[in-house]
Amino acid sequence: MEPTPLNPAQQEVLDLLGAAPDERPTFSPALRDALLADLEDGLADLGAELDPEDPLFVSKRALANVHGCELRHVVERGADFEWNATIARGSVAHKAIELSVHWRGEPDPLDMVDEALARLTDGTDSLAEWLRACAEADRAELRALANERVVTFFECFPPLKARWVPVTEGRQRASLLGGRVVLSGRTDLSLGRPVGSTAGKVIIDLKTGGFSPSHLDDLRFYALVETLRLGTPPRLLASYYLDSGRAHPEPVTEGLLHAAVARTVDGARLLHELEVGSREPQTRPGRTCRWCPALAGCGPGRAHLGDDDLDDRFDDD
Image (tube, rainbow, N blue to C red; front, top):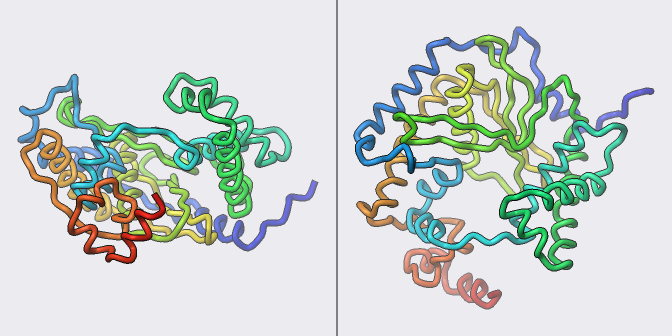
């Protein structure tokens, strides 16, 4: 059978993410040890305050929050997490995409979503509990939201071949200071793999909405943890914006990884200080103030948004 022709968006992804063997960079085998040493040197004085049985967990989200607005981070950390259709959309869509990679024949997006919902409902985590208990209307809304995301992915990405080694929801983990600090992440999608010290992996974050500088930092953190895990960095990072069908790529360099080390050290120190109460959280107003649970009592955030925006925000509640 003739392969299905690619649309321009799919061809653009194929051209962007592919690379001939002689176009792939090679890194020093000593790079991992150098990055690990820099991380542990930067956090060494916290070792006596941390317990390997109760480590400091550092994630992409925690770093983004604490480098954004410390007050929002503290408020959200103390709030009870509750699933809803919007939050669960990503988990269901990623599971559906994972199933579609290995599906025999032509996968149908809605069939993949239904299979994903069935498997996630049979799980043992908090999402499974919510799926088993949620109202039928919530489940229908989640099905629609996840289907929209999966359809958009199928429209924008070429069919993922098994030889590209596609992995969705890939888990990453690196331990520092004898397990007292743990860096953890979960990548939306990765393609390829390294060969020795030659980079070959591409890490992709799937996004809805528009570009934010924090998206670059998210992927740089993933690249750092991947390098600590394997010793060979990924070749390329890319935020892919499904709504616009565009990618924002960034090649991985040693300089990028060292910058990620500095940001991770600073963020980990802030996270620890805020957790133990040795630091008063700083307020940094920005575009996310509109959705902040602390907005009602936050003068800087209210001033940043202005009276008209505040009226609209609280009227919607």
